[in-house]
Length: 481
Ligand SMILES: [Zn+2]
Image 1 (cartoon, helix red, strand yellow):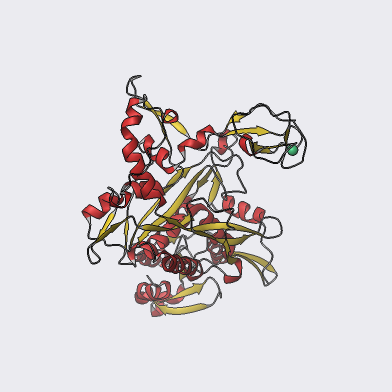
Image 2 (tube, helix red, strand yellow):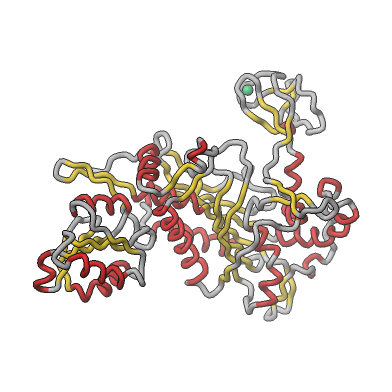
C-alpha cells in the first residue's frame, strides 16, 4: 500500500538522484533558488514539451513566441507593475508580519489610510492587533532591477520581467501582421520570470526566479465566457492526461474581492501538496482579463513622449487617458466578416512550470514492499519520464555488452536512453525505478541462443521476452512516441 508522501522524502530523493539541488550549495546555498540536475532538467523539459504540444502543436488556433526577458520600461508602466515600486511595507515588531503601509488601519476608525501618512503610531497590526509597534516603512520592490548600457547618459534602469504575458501583448500587432491568424486565436510562451517575493515557500513551490507557461487567447467580446470554460476544461485535462491523480486536483474560483479590478473571472487549478497534512496550492491560474491589457498598452503608446520629456523616469509620469475611439486604436482587431473593429478579450491560462514539475514528482512518487524490501519508484507518465528505456547486459562478458550497446545506439536516436553494465541487475532495476524509467531491456545468456531480450516493466515489474530486432518498434508502441 502506498505510504503518505512527505515533502522531506521528495527533497531527499531529488538530491540523491540528481533531480533538484540547492543553488550555489558549495557556498552554503542561496535562499529559495534551485538548480535542476541531470534527471531534473530532462523531467522539466518534458513537462514544458508536453505543455507546448498540447497548447501549440496540437491546435490550429495557437502560435508560439519567445520574447526577451528585458523589455522597454514603459511596458511595466502600462501593465501596472512599475507603480508597485511605490509600495511601502512596515514590519510589526511583535509578530514580524510585514504589511503594506497603505493597508494599515487606524485604531480610531477603520478607514484605510493613504500611504502618504507615514506616522504609524496609531496603526493596528492586522495580524496580532498590536498598536503602533512598527519598523520604519521601507520600499518593497516586486521587480528586480538592473542598469542597462555602459555610459551614464544612455544607461537606464530596466527590470527583469515579473511575468511573460506582457511580451505577448507587446507583440500582438506583430503576430497579427506577420501571420494569418484570425480571432479567436492564442499566442503561447514559456520562459523565466522574476519576482522579489516578500515570502517564499517550500522547496521549488514559490521561488523568486521561476518559469511560466502562459497563453493569451484573444477572442471576440461576448464569446469570452465560453472560451473561459473551454480553457478551464482543457487545462485540467492536461494534468490528468499526463497521469496526475484526479483526487489531487481541484478548481478554486476566486472570490470577487480576490479578483484584479479588470478581471471578469479567475479560477485556480490546485494540487494537494504534501506540505503539512495536505495543502491545496495553485498550479495554474485561468483568468478572463477582458480587453484590459491591450487597452493599457494603447495608453502606454500615447504616453511614450512624456516618458522622454521626463528624463525617462517612470515615477514622474502617469498614463494618458484612452482616446474616445480606443476601439479603433493601434492594438485593435478588424473582423473582416463582421466588418467591425474591436479590442479582443483575453483568456489567460498561466501555469507554473516549476510547480507542475514538483506536482508531477510528488504525484508519481511511490513506495511499496517487495519481498520484504522497500521499493521507491516514480510512476511517471512515459511522456514525462526523464529516461524512457535503460539497456543492460546481464554480465560484462560473452558478447552481451556488444549486443546491448547496439540496441542502445539504435534506441537513443529516438528517445532518451541509459546504458548501464555496473553491479547486480536487481540493483540496476531499482536505480531505474527511482529515476522513473518505464522500461529496462536486459541482454542475457539466452540472447545468444534465440536473439531474444528481457523487457521489464517499471510499474508491474513483469518481464517479457521479445525479439531483439523488435525492441525499437515495441518501445515506440508502448511509449506512444
Ligand atoms: Zn503583529
